[in-house]
Amino acid sequence: MSEPTDRIAEATRRLAAAGRDKAPCAPVRELIGRDDTDAAYAVQQRTEAAAAESGRVVVGRKIGLTSLAVQAQLGVDQPDYGTLFADTGFSNGSEIPVEQFLQPRIEAEVALALSRDMDHANPSVDDILDALDWAAPALEIVDSRIANWDISLADTIADNASYGGHVIGPRLRNAKHVDFSALSMEMDLNGAVVSSGTGSDCMGSPIIAAAWLAATLYDLGMPIRAGQIVLTGALGSMVPVKEQQQIIARIEGLGEVSCQFR
Picture 1 (cartoon, one colour):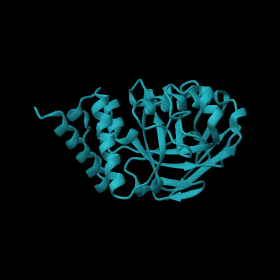
Picture 2 (cartoon, helix red, strand yellow; picture 1 turned 90 degrees about the horizontal axis):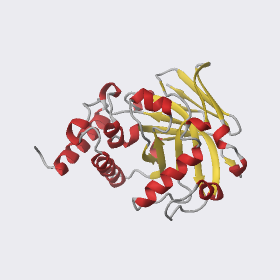
Picture 3 (cartoon, rainbow, N blue to C red; picture 1 turned 45 degrees about the vertical axis):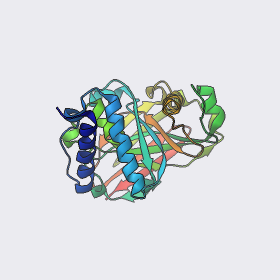
């Protein structure tokens, strides 16, 4: 059997080729193990390093698998995290070429940014709220380089938490007064409601999710930095998207975010 570093390298190459060629690949769990999250994050980190070398700019982090509905869809039972890039961030109302992705799905969530670094151990919900710069309704375009979305936890972690792109809606400053656990969300596809949920569906609250991410990343030596975008995780089920579809998500208290696939 090959050494772990060889298997991590092969998994990294497999995912890179799938993204480059727009051809979904076989699961990488056969290389790194279904439940080996350390190996999966090693693949993710190699992918991020290669992206940085090619000139891609990191603008934030995402939390995945925060919703029980999404966990049930994918057959996993814990959250994960990934990296957001500037070149896959779209403005509110954008027209987005669907061919940029392989197997896109979309979900609605809360985005936020902090006014100072979370550079200490075990940041609390109060720490996140005290540092909150803005919050916004957001759409995450979720995508998988793995064929047919046949993923385990290790597959999605290695694949940058199945990140494809993001759309940020209007930014609400002074959002500390918002009851994030009570937020309600509805997402429409071509005028029909296809997903709904509340803030409590995201680990109890998007702020709890952000605190989990801040603690996790601090322990790994890469704390959330001031100004970075944090996508806090889905408030409801994700849905497949294709060309000629418009998505509008409304999050009570934060506003509306939309995009059009072409």
